Length: 511
Image (cartoon, rainbow, N blue to C red; front, side, top):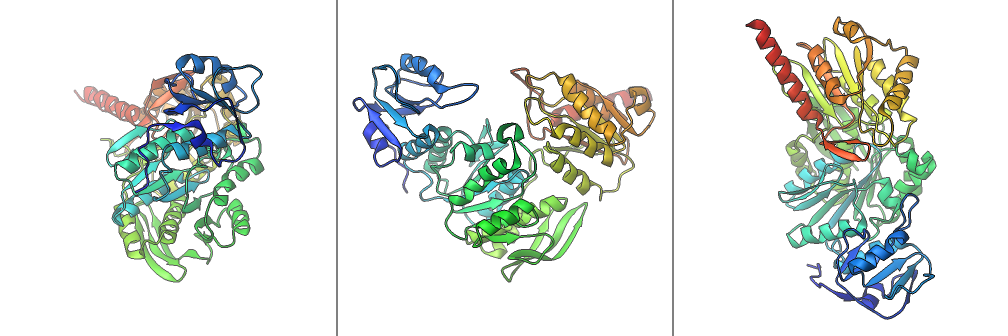
């Protein structure tokens, strides 16, 4: 079924017919591919990826010492490296295309669905996974949470891995029996040509809101990266969210694509919808065909995710009745409004919302759920877009009785400076800064607790029966990045621990 088991190639075989490549020196026998000199083994072809903070050219000596048999670089070498050198107009694109060839073009005979956008990608992939399984496929999934197939789960290093790792894993899953692939496609991946060795059959555009502007610098560049996915598709094989202004723009560029909307009559729309705290149900029109929609997912933003998944499955040729069953069978998505059971009758939720738009959408969805008091805990990551920090704090303050501002992944930034930017946003949104004593007495406003574990413990200690607590920002992540060190930290574990401590303290008070 198409996956090559060939273990070695002559360099000229990997290069033949590929654009923008010029070879110098003799050929070589290539038994592996690498773009990280630390992981390179003897016989590998080394790709010296250009970069601003770190440039692959600086690691050529290390790669040669480790046994690289040839190099791919972006400009002619000034020295003789003693091995064949391939000069590429675009090293990242060359890497994707060579990896595609080396790993036997593993997506050539798979059904491949790509999901791109700022928010909703992960939820959409879980919905599609359930639909595809119901339709009899054996799908492999690549996304923010993990890379998985048939019980095998690999923690995700990136939403979309480097092309070498991506195509190698797809080839492995394909050899194990995968016949479909659902892939979250990040803007970084599109900008860096990580998915150019993949044959996409269907693509979904979820939405576009400010994110990753530390990398893309402005929204036009961010959108341009996302839009690249739709240039890789056959005609009319895309579904696009028309409730998003960038979606409308994208649909104008690709008029044959199908549009979906929560609010307007279009190719895929909702003649009937009921949404409440228990989920959504209604009727979807698919170019005139009718599908009954029922899901436990909460909120308007999840209605969009449901429509995107429905549309992609429909475009892929899956029958509406099968799509219905697949949606009904879809599991809880890790870290996406994931409920944490407790003995205090508190609705405690952990969510990945880490942009102001995503947080606002989650808080708006939760506003429809009755609650005595509403608590939100949120932080912002370091070495990332600073503009979103005051906006996220303001969104939390506007929708909550008590907000706890804390650290997320500070990385190499000072967490106190990050929190100060969030604090200013909360104050500008008319939030009242409280002492811990005032907050414990039931005052409305916000507190700043820099250490995340202590912040979660404080929030858990304050909630009571009938309250709603949202711990946002990290979702499924099971780590915290402090400086350049990654340490184990899982909001779900910490919240359970805090609730258990609360229960123990309650028990000791009752003795």
